[in-house]
Length: 80
Image 1: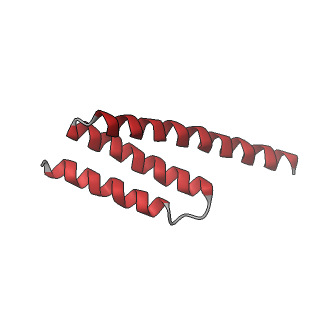
Image 2 (image 1 turned 45 degrees about the horizontal axis):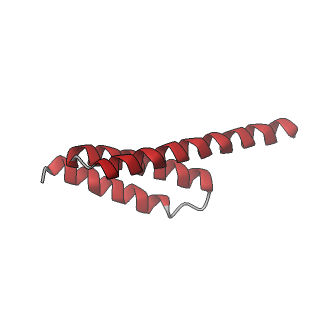
């Protein structure tokens, strides 16, 4: 297997493991978003459509929730 592809796979795994160490949901989602992005690239190298699709879906979900968290923070600071 391509060394670059393997390295991307290991980076995806490492960032995923790092994500689950985060207690705050925003930090978790940000790091899992990064992990999912690496899985997409890894899937491209492997030509694995299921891996690419899963990565894209996770990215969409995390971006949605990160935007939601950001809006909630803005709203809570405006109320103060």
